[in-house]
Image 1 (tube, rainbow, N blue to C red):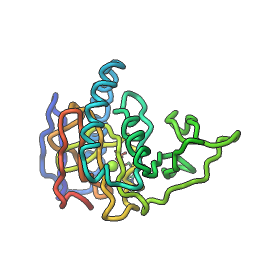
Image 2: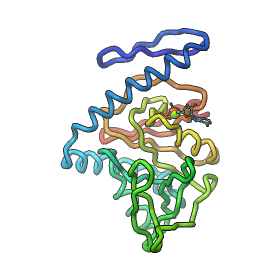
Image 3: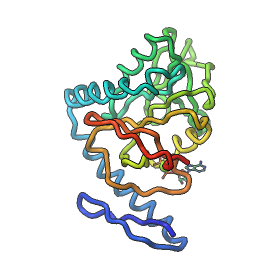
Image 4: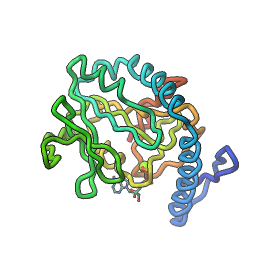
Length: 223
Ligand code: ADP
Ligand code: MG
C-alpha cells in the first residue's frame, strides 16, 4: 500500500492507493510541490533571506549535535536557500572539518573547505570549493566520516521527510553515512508541509530547523 498525495490549493490530502501506477503519480505530486515551493522562495528579497537565515542558523547552533560535530557537511546556498555562512564560521572556529558538496560524473561528493579554497560554480551553477589554477580540489571527505550534515531542500515535514530538487543526490549521499551521523534539514518556516510524499529511496532527516523552530523528527523516520 502506498500513500498518494493530491495537491489541493495550499494543503495536501492523503489517499491510500495501491499498484505500480502510484509511483508515477507520486512523482507528479512531487513535481507540483516543487514548483509551488520554488515559486514562493523566489519571492524573498535579500533582506528577508538574510534575516530569516540568521534566525534559522542560530537555532541550528543551539543543537548540541551540531556544535559537538567534528566533521560537518554544509551547502553553498543558491536560489534564495537559507544561508549557511554563520554555521561555517561557527564550525571552523571550533576546529571542525567543514565540507561542501560538488558534483563529479553525476554523483555528489563532499570536499573539505579551508582557507586555501576559492569558490567556483559547478554543475547547476552551485558554488563548489576549489583549489589551484585548474580549480582542482582532491580533498574528498568520505560519507562515513560525517557527524552532521546540513541539508537544503525544497520542502520538509515534521516526520523528517524531504523534497529535494528531483535528482536524488542527497538520498544517494545520505544513504552512505553512518547511523550515528545526524541529518539536519535547513529551511524557511513556509517550506514546512504537513505531510510530504515519501518513496522507498527517500532518506529521512533527524531534525528540521527553520527560522521559527527546531523539529526533532521521530527516530523511526530514519531509514
Ligand atoms: P529528490 O530527493 O531530489 O527530491 P527524488 O527523491 O524524487 O528526488 O529522487 C529522484 C530520482 O533519484 C528518482 O528517480 C529516484 O529513483 C532516484 N534515486 C534517489 N535515491 C536513489 C538511490 N539511493 N538509488 C538509486 N536511485 C535513487
Ligand atoms: Mg528524495
